[in-house]
Length: 360
Ligand SMILES: Cc1cc2nc3c(=O)[nH]c(=O)nc-3n(C[C@H](O)[C@H](O)[C@H](O)COP(=O)(O)OP(=O)(O)OC[C@H]3O[C@@H](n4cnc5c(N)ncnc54)[C@H](O)[C@@H]3O)c2cc1C
Image 1 (cartoon, rainbow, N blue to C red):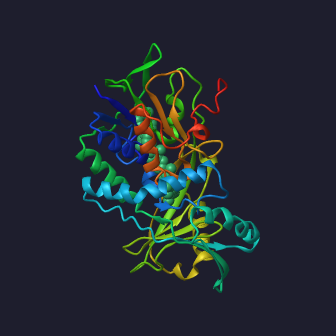
Image 2 (image 1 turned 180 degrees about the horizontal axis):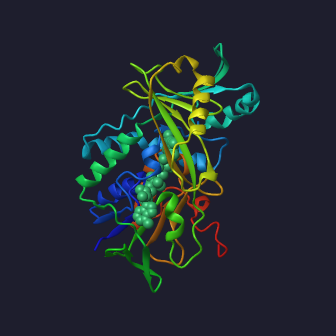
Image 3 (image 1 turned 135 degrees about the vertical axis):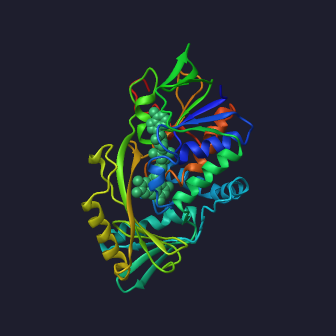
């Protein structure tokens, strides 16, 4: 028996469970695999509400609202976990290629509506004649953040059950009554579907949600100390220097790989090109590993957030694509408001989980 059953122990499920447990709710988290999610374990940790946006719109506003929530979120996390997530609001530099110069220059207008201090730099670097400096963005250490959330969940008494895939969200008379795994049935009146790229097939009585995996590969180099103090974006990827000198190089996008989460030689070659084009002086550094994850993507790039219409107690929190770490605080705030029967602070219309369904 649980007040809320969260399906998926990735960053979205763990963040949501922790926030709900803060209200005293009895929360269980079920996951098919090990702790920490699938895509979540692969994340570079970039918190780039503007760097990750090509234009203004509801998705950018959601990114920004989540970014603004991050400092308080991390402070609260520190009270429940001894693991330092290495939150660093140290800004993001974006190198501007000649072909994107005009578009990016025009984009300064909307970027400055969020952050007036965004600057256009000419002659920033001999190899990169133009750049955008955005001081109010940053990063976190992906694996440490996920581990901190898991520890914080335990501190608040969240019951995390690993190796327990949800097979079915059971509904009776249009109301969630239980979540079934192959070994048990957990009675509950509220289920939060946060199963990342696997969320699609778990919807009761409806066509699958259109969440598809997009493989992302990343690798790391190891320097003696961080080679620069902030994240750098380029036209084909990014470099994220971590406190211990690790530099995460990301990331490929490969929708054709389906659910294949292996690292490929072509992926490593593409990431080597990112380093070569952005910061060739890093090429002699030792290799510090490569990995891949399956980002949960939706057809319009926006997450699926909100109650599922027609089924009481079913809440969808999936499809966070490239930005699940960034969006974890706002997602948790939204789900908490819905569970409490309150109106979320964010207008959920652009994120309605049923927007691709014929009945909508
Ligand atoms: C290379 C790479 C770099 C990235 N970098 C960043 C970044 O810098 N910043 C950022 O914000 N985001 C980044 N992302 C995206 C981010 O990782 C995702 O948006 C985020 O992890 C999605 O979280 P999730 O919890 O929805 O999914 P996941 O982490 O995939 O978790 C879903 C969980 O559901 C479980 N599950 C599946 N089926 C079932 C079932 N039937 N029952 C129970 N559990 C089930 C899975 O085992 C998994 O643990 C990156 C992704 C990749 C691949």
